[in-house]
Image (tube, rainbow, N blue to C red; front, side, top):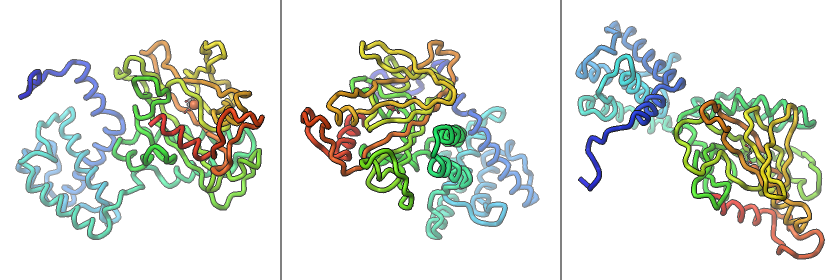
Length: 383
Ligand SMILES: O=C(O)CCC(=O)C(=O)O
Ligand SMILES: [Fe+2]
């Protein structure tokens, strides 16, 4: 064993409490109970003893060998692979958690080899039948998704309409962030220059000079609506809402504080946005700050019914620094103990991809480049 590594390294109280909290988060408890209900219903239907919490490993292995094979939804349909995996995982956690505190492992334990052989056989069969695909319904309900899309795209004609719609989305969005990591991964953004998708915690470094990445999650919605003919404020932006323009809506989630804040870490490090302008919608948690020309930061606390507009880097380049992009950041509340989570939405307005951004005053202070090349160059600095 390598120096300094103990086989049974003692865990700190803090670590134990963190693991316990994770284990017992509300959503986890809910899915654990659901899996237990499914197994109980199965045992009752088979006229067997349904107090499986008290079974020894031999009894459990025997029951699970059949359960995995026979398992069907209430309507008789087969579960998809991911749902089956979730049920087995949740059952395992259910039995390992208080009040049962069972010390075996249904997934890795040798005592459960037989049931797990059956489990894998069922998965292989499901994959052959084309049920290997991820079950998207588990992630976010169709109705919620519909609400999400229609809120953004259908009626953003007036500032207050846009604002109300956005506020509907805080709830929908939070449901997503509270899902398990493995579910959110399915929607992850692919690579530094793609836009659409989920970005996990501590991936993005808004301030490239910072040694630590931001403690936040985000979801960018790339707006690709072929049929819409939304005319925005200038010819250079006339493709917003269609292919050829990379404007995007980003949902941001700053988790409630646990003990894990690193030294120097922020909710969102100092930066300016990349595009022309950004429309920012915040909840009431506060923490956003903007930088004054003298370098001081002042709070930009939320004002009811108000959308905050930030000028972005592209506009600064375009105007040869006549207009200056607003540097901003999101800090933790001063009283770290009382902190709650924070949510915001940012709509990043970009010029159409092929628009050549050339200094409008003809100074050529910055070399001409297309809006898309500029955006990609910026993305490469933060991932
Ligand atoms: O969450 C906020 O209020 C600001 C987020 C932000 O600045 C960004 O994503 O660029
Ligand atoms: Fe920003």
